[in-house]
Length: 268
Ligand SMILES: NC(=O)C1=CN([C@@H]2O[C@H](COP(=O)(O)OP(=O)(O)OC[C@H]3O[C@@H](n4cnc5c(N)ncnc54)[C@H](OP(=O)(O)O)[C@@H]3O)[C@@H](O)[C@H]2O)C=CC1
Ligand SMILES: O=C(O)C1=N[C@H](C(=O)O)C[C@H](O)C1
Image (cartoon, rainbow, N blue to C red; front, side, top):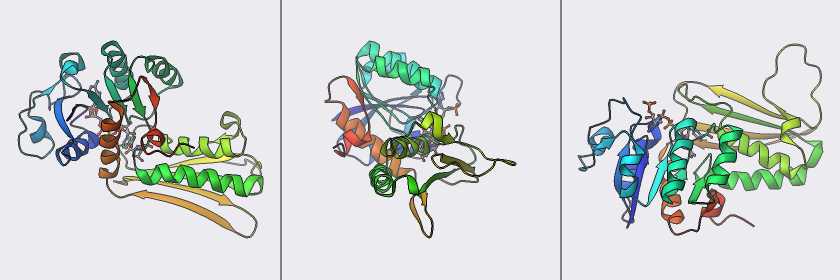
């Protein structure tokens, strides 16, 4: 039985991850913690997430509970996640990271740290989005430079980072398939007399509204036709189940940085 530690258990994803663990016979909750000062600290983790009490008290420091579990599942905030990864490296503890919005420096540090512990990091843990990456790669290769690539993502009003980590990954996939540098071709905003669209730009646009769980559209616009590849998440449980699958997979891997394509066996 894999023993999991949930970081940010009182968050939108933390709660759904606890439900996914509760429904799975192969993994159990060893510990849970929250941001210091959170009202959830000291409460029972089950109660915090709308389940019956589980006998696991929410703590406020990973340091105090890291010895209790095999794997830390972290969907929190970029600065917290990188601090947790430093501890995971120190204690050689496996980690699943769903947090998006890590800075370039934080990503570089995570790559270095992961030489000391096995880590799955992915901006989207749903099977559907990981399949979408493959479909986008194929479409971009077939359609080539004659079709304009535009990515539109929509999320709930509480989301802090933009564009979504998934939209950025979709853009990276399209750029690689078209042999383009996203640093040079990514266009994240348009306003005013901007002139005609340049042929090789990849547009990445953000919508924030209400309670949208997560939607991503990749549009290939040609002359006389357009193709749209769309993924709509209607429940966070799809991400939570993916995170639990990754947690069970990563505990027996050697140190290194993996993604959901590794977990799902989608790498060529
Ligand atoms: N990879 C994937 O499949 C998915 C990724 N995400 C990503 O996951 C992240 C979280 O999303 P979401 O659940 O909606 O956000 P929430 O804000 O609802 O949850 C984050 C939780 O982490 C807590 N937290 C912040 N700092 C710490 C800390 N130092 N230690 C412990 N807990 C901490 C927050 O507490 P407080 O609110 O008190 O600050 C909050 O309870 C985002 O980056 C999002 O983009 C989301 C869905 C799917
Ligand atoms: O913050 C969210 O909610 C989500 N974030 C992820 C991202 O930034 O790609 C994935 C998902 O769409 C939900």
